[in-house]
Image 1 (cartoon, rainbow, N blue to C red):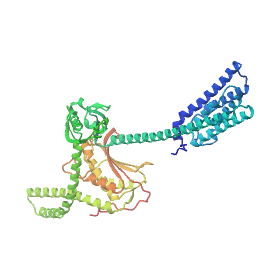
Image 2 (image 1 turned 30 degrees about the horizontal axis):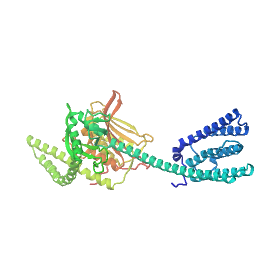
Image 3 (image 1 turned 90 degrees about the vertical axis):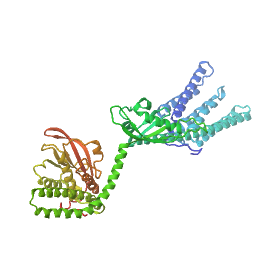
Length: 567
């Protein structure tokens, strides 16, 4: 911003709104004072100039109208006709009063300071100097007119007018420079305030959603700030109202001692602590501390240093480490499974040939045990190898298009036909002719896996298992497998779709992982939630696995349900 220009936007003119109102109010008060002076002069028989009284009354009416109807924001600071109702009117009225008062003892020259101040504060330097020049020329014109009609010392009048004009120019320039600097500083302060608010909003958002706990403490152990994760890790005694003292709860004493060590040594600290609440299992935490800034003793800075404490749940850290180990084991297991598949096939075939010649019941029982366990090993190796197959298809295979309800109906019928007595449930199709981007054989594998899981944990009722589809305008097409089983444990739910994770010792833990991989391959998503269904026997809570599909406008393709996966 230069000294000759002031910003003219709505936001930049707002800081001067109060000054604008003050100037408008001052104009009304000056006009009232002029009217009262004229009335007082007439009452004392000093003057009966009705013209001056009329000018004062007209000026009062004009200033009042401007104050009432034009008081929202100051006008554009650049020179223009927008200043005529204020600065222009003031100069004209004061010049007229000064001209009429030349024959009397009153002098209105000092009132020219009002429009000059208004121009200097609310306008540009050009407007301020132009207003001052106009006033000075009017004063010179009045001095010349008096010299022509009133006589007297003309040189003294011109000298007085010059001094007055010079003073007005100095005032206009200084006031404008001061107003420009105030505007600049207010803009900087406003930007700094906006930056600070933005930073606070971002910090609060990060604090609220970060998975690890964060505490901010002062040197006395007073918790100034704590995010929801930290309050949860602190246990049942944590209070949501800030601030609170760590030292007031016995279970938090290890955290308090760590914070004190951080302040005393002025160095970051880290260690593992146990939070022990009476009647609750111990909570293992890995704690790291940092100071907001080191004390500046050399400079004598009196700035409070705060301790930021980061809390990590050791159980979660161990779970992530376990998942990484399991993933590594999975890759190794895939290689091992590939190597043992051929010897295992030979064992199965040799056992079948041997069983044909066995007559002893004990030997037949042993052969049957070998066949059962070999079959189990075959299933496990196939599940392990499925991971590599799925990844191969994710990298190479194109997506297909199918009509969801027709494909789901075929898969449901085939699944029920394998064991009609046990595989009972309800089929609710509400997707109509909706098309989804998914391979038919991949959808078969996802559905069969989810249906087998639901069958394993469902209740004894005919409506204990429900397969439904739905297509709603403006929402993704989805299908849901619901069963009225018991809710999953939180520790199981957290790792539900991880490879090699299972709540059963006889399961490979790959079924749901493969389902997720196949869904991601086609741009779909799969999730678990606890859901309540309205059935004939009332509202029943159960476990629901929902697959949300990526919509498509392509026509359905004839895709065989018996396509095999490429190894």
